Image (cartoon, rainbow, N blue to C red; front, side, top):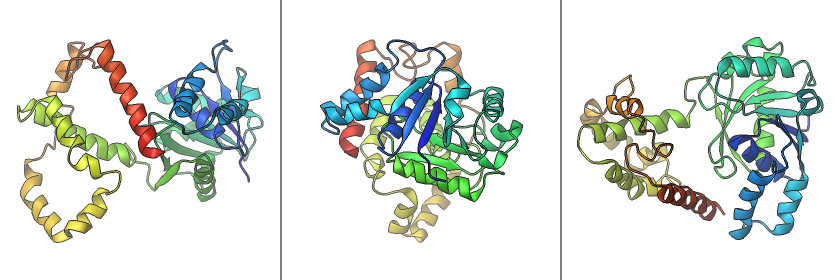
Length: 306
């Protein structure tokens, strides 16, 4: 099967980003399923594209070509009946995702691929109410979805090898970097590593070793700089597995190994200190500093990637 028609279910932050990603390929037509056809429905996508135009990543003509390949549809049947590849960006509620895929199966072709953009939930469990479970696959985009290259393709207990290959092919066509997670495990690949780091970072703050801002600086100005080029496994080989063993033999027993969220994290949550949402978390945030953080991240990613 050649994938030409892509349907994205859900026009929220990730849905809009994914629609733009697939529409960047001239070989793909995108339908974005939304509940209502608002006059400003293209605005979030236009905002993403305008930043790329301003950074000379794409031209104004290319921007219009991308927009021309995206259509909106409110009717789920119409949105999915001719699709080759369908990816959902529904809320992270297991029953919602299960019921959505079960309903889509009533409308879509038997060879259509059903992908879930879940960041943490099991694709095997999401496929539980489907008839043709072998066509359900995980495709976890990272936020911001239109910029981060990685997409984790997760093989469920049922996913066929053909569906995995077709999914990785269409992601490459859309300019992404797909990687295969061979087993359906919580956190897949990258989130397992990311949250191991977060657990240690929070523990350092909790135990008074350094404050939150210092922890972030320690990452940004040391190993964080080389991570885009030098991953942990290559780094271990570079310094030697013997040295890596000796370091781990000495330090691992002192690293955070709790199986529960940090008491400090629980304390912040219970106090309503939710970070950007409330202006206070591990650090204090103003509307200006929040805007600055988001803008600098977008500009950094665009400049680094393009």
